[in-house]
Amino acid sequence: MGAEFEAAINRLVDQMRPAKGQAWDTRAHRAADALAQLCAGRSDDTASRGPDAHTPSAAAKPLLVVHVPMAGPATVAGIPLPDAKVEQLRANSTIEPVLIDDTGAPVTVGRRFAALSPKVTRSIRLRDGHCRWPGCDMRTGLEIHHLVPRSAGGTDDIANLAAVCTVAHHHEQLIPHGPYALLGNPNQPDGLTLVLYAELTPDQATEHGLPPPPPPLRRRE
Image (tube, rainbow, N blue to C red; front, side, top):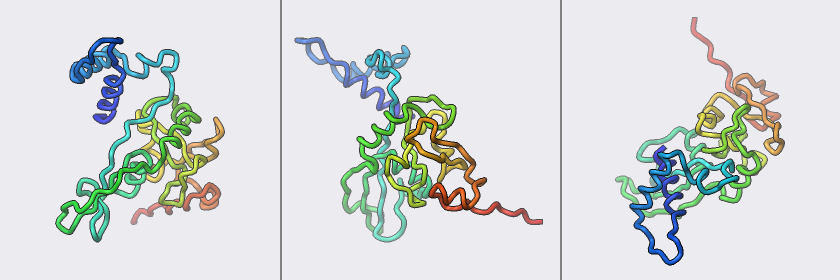
């Protein structure tokens, strides 16, 4: 939420250009005016786009600083994250790898990069127009979801990607970090179906490029 707020303020500040021949106001004053606009219910999506106010927009893009030790697992802020969470962040973050030594001190900082190019993410948002969770028309806070997770062999091809919102917490409910899966062809407007991953048969999972779901846990008598 903090990243989304900061991104919204910065976009508004950058749009506040002075009239021709007038001096620029300070950035602090422009930020205060931007905050007033937000409090009044005006954002860059509604105040500046006019008839294009319903253009689908991405969620704030966090910076993921990954510490890579000489040996052992990579960590974020010193904490090994679950693979499912790292996979979600990978598709929607800017990644900055930092090589650290045995004491945790940084040795070198790698170049920042995005796993998915801006061109791909923009094309997915424009193709989908809103969250692809069935029945959800949310057009803001969209993230890119891999129908077949990277950990299961999924690719970054457009046919394996769909826009899913964070506002209604739909992205976090999808595999590999949630119980649901979106199956089908995202290039068709009604081409995706929401299913419980655990209820798929092995043949159904294989048909859609997914590994078979684990068998249900048996209760001890």
